[in-house]
Image (cartoon, rainbow over all chains, first blue to last red; front, top):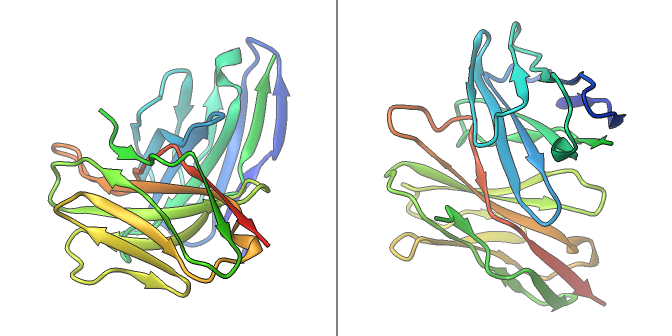
Length: 113
Length: 119
């Protein structure tokens, strides 16, 4: 069972570079979300999606773009990376039943130099 | 204002003993969900237990139970018979509806409690 798959696991960028963090789920979940985790802090919501073609901003959306063309995939784009975006990024998916429990991918550790 | 407050940065427990991790929350939404996740040193986020705001009974999942006190807005995690493998960071999280929007797909997390289990 793959669940939620995030790639890459690690990434180093230079300031100003762009990149896309990939997230895929094989559970046919309607909801997908991106979070970032900074040292000593809990996770904070960046963007989320309630279904294909529908996305919305979370608590810390600046500097990130998302799109959701399929149920399975929810990529997170950094258009011009900044050192403040150094963090661990988690993707999660959930469905409308069972309390909407979110299941997380293994995370992507990103460093921006 | 903090939506989720975990006041214990670190906790220690002896193996085989029980431990309670505190969590208080703040919401005006009558329909909300409370969750606990475990994050071991390897970094993944592992779902442990869920409590809905309308659930009459406290949730239990194996050695985990959630002590839900709605009037006090607390949702403490109780781990019974601690094991060495329970050493990890534990996060309390809440799902709530924002005005005019859905709550699904959105969690607010506390800052976490590091639990260390001693042999």
